[in-house]
Image (tube, rainbow, N blue to C red; front, top):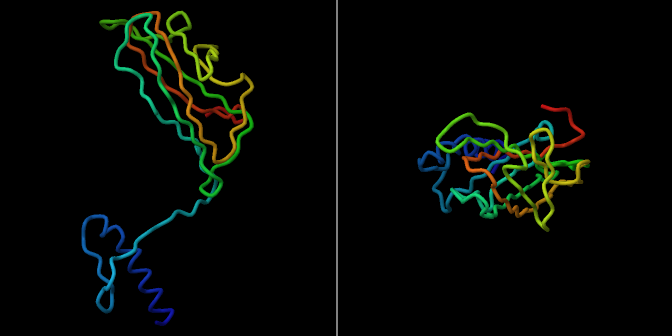
Length: 177
């Protein structure tokens, strides 16, 4: 098969991929297919990923608990590998914003350590400063490309209300965005 014909066949397959995803039958431009089509794709990155770290729930927050009742939840952090745009970071910190709304409504406010105590894996207490909880040494920790870890948190709420959590993984060496 000539290079022109191979290039044409590859172009047709790549152009037909969205059609295949929509449920249409993919047929070759010449001859009769004697195999199922092989499709694939990839991305070419022009620069490093803006946010290569992914945070996900492993064990979610509970729907409800009583004041003073301990509960656990787990969060997984993954830094992409260098091949897909990940990079190493020297000073990473997990920052968690917790808001509380009183039962029955009212004004939402930032939770404090009087409202909620949280410890991470190994019983290490989360830090608290300026309205945010944080996990990790105050000057951060190294997170190489390809890093993957799950942290089990244990918490106790001391104030009744509806709590919302927002967590970020931050590079302390990067400008705030």
